[in-house]
Length: 148
Image (cartoon, rainbow, N blue to C red; front, side, top):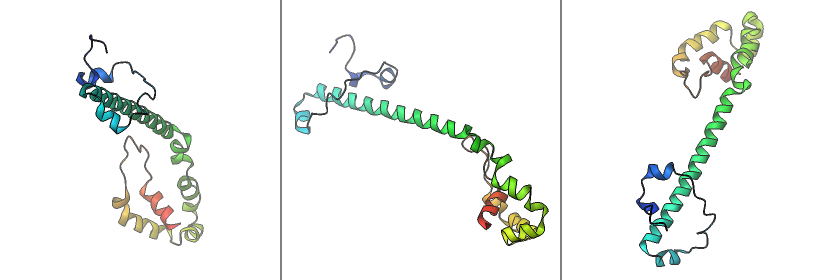
């Protein structure tokens, strides 16, 4: 160990987080609990620090990957074009809403009954938009899917 830097277990979390990662490979994979107990305290602290840093690095990588995947999912045309090209917009708003007979055949309710039920439950099933869901499914869409 170098005398210039304090041992890993004495360094601050931020200094370890922003320092370049050191990969020791699978150096401690053969170490049994008996061998670990035989090590002196400083060695144990250094080993535990290394293992914790390795876990933090892995978690950081996994979180970064998850955020990248979620960002891509929100940008996919399947999700962004739903208001213009989705089931509810095309089938209900463009076709069935103008044909009472077909609307009743499709939903087993007439348009007035559909709107009455929607009025009763709309406040309970409406979700506000958020960063995670910028275009949530509307209450009318939810009711239409439920009835279908």
